[in-house]
Image: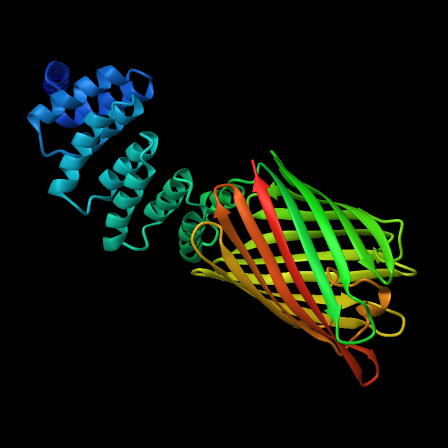
Length: 410
């Protein structure tokens, strides 16, 4: 009986002691408890009271960096950027390697509409840790916000080379590629000359482009003079987004003429494979005097300021399949400027003007393209190309193409 009374007394003593500790804690909470209360208040919407608790905690423990970083974020959430910057700068002054404080400061500068300041903060961190995923992503995002499309693309490619399946990086890349193409009108002229057989060809193209929520749609009228005949062709292209890292190309065209396909269509699915690789698979259909189906696709990779791709074309036929291909090398410069070199063998669907050209196996081609922003929202483009064609066994001709275009965006 006495033993039981002793046990009961001990339990009562422990319970009383615990109650005193709880009461004392509620009257004088620790710094950690203040921090936890501040977080609960902030996430329930009471950010002002949360800031007061953080300031109280920092009075007792000025070196508690996690609380100071959280306070900096609280100021940022209420657009009190100067106060937030002061807290975060203090942390980085004492601890330049503090990644949490640097990321919080980057977010603050982005929200304060200072994207280039955010880029500088990212670069300072990346100099110490070049593989930091969050800094790479936020740098690309800040460059996007600053309107520097090409630099943003390069930055996000660096992220995807290290983290190829990063969903935010893939989504950001799709978003960056769509900057500045809401509407545009293109006027293009090409002139072809031959060293034998044909008189010069001429073609004029007028194109209108509009970007919808699902992707871009282009309407185009081609007017050409070939084989002593003139005719027009109407085409529509679309580039719908399917999901993150996946988009499509769709085409349909019509012409009541023999110098264009009477009907044409095509489709292709593009997929980001990670590590800056992409691939596609698709087809083209051309109806001249007979039907032509072409299977195609690409495998491509971004490396720094360059993009490389290989595109084969396979044309099945009862007399034997025709196989051709093109290697593309593109160099990106500042803004949206680039130059592209294409070399290959066999004809592509974009070059042919008759069924016969599809099956010319012994031909090769080279083409140099350029695209440059002449001044704000006004772009110039063009290319020169040479094709070597076998039109009889052992007998060849050369086709030289000169193209120039202007585009106005608005």
